[in-house]
Every structure is written in structure tokens, then in C-alpha cells.
Amino acid sequence: MIITKQTTAEKLMAYLRHDITAAELVDWSETSLMDGELDEAHANRIASLPARLGVADVRAFGLAWEDCENILRELGYEAHVEITAA
Image (cartoon, rainbow, N blue to C red):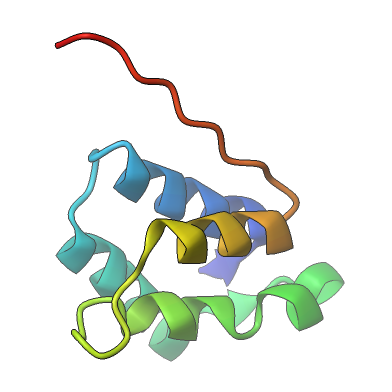
């Protein structure tokens, strides 16, 4: 599996949309670190991100909204929030 900016951003976006759980995001991150290869074109930019996401389930590290925004920004994306009535 090749870890790209896009695949990393898609996993984080899926987590933010509640399509996957924090545990699933952490599992993907840990598996990526063990079995994946970084996309050489963007290796410098994405090298630390799977490791950062891989500890999101540890209370001391967590994953705040600002963390997600910063990670997405590093990947070349912008996060926007839309609030609607339930």
C-alpha cells in the first residue's frame, strides 16, 4: 500500500464525517506505518502524519479539531464546517 497525501486526507476526512471511528483511523495509521510505503513525491510532507494519527487513541495525545485542521492544511486541504438543524 502506498501512502499518499490523498489517501491520508481521505482517511482523516472519513473520520471527521463519522464514516469511520477513531479506532479505525488509528488501525489504518498503524497498518500504514508497518506495511505501507510513502509516496516519494510527497514523502517529506506526509512522513510524520500516519504516526501522528496512530496515537489519536491515547488520551495524552488525542486528536482535536485544530489537529485535524493542521494535518489537512499540511496535506494541501482546507477544512470547513457546516452546521444544520437536526
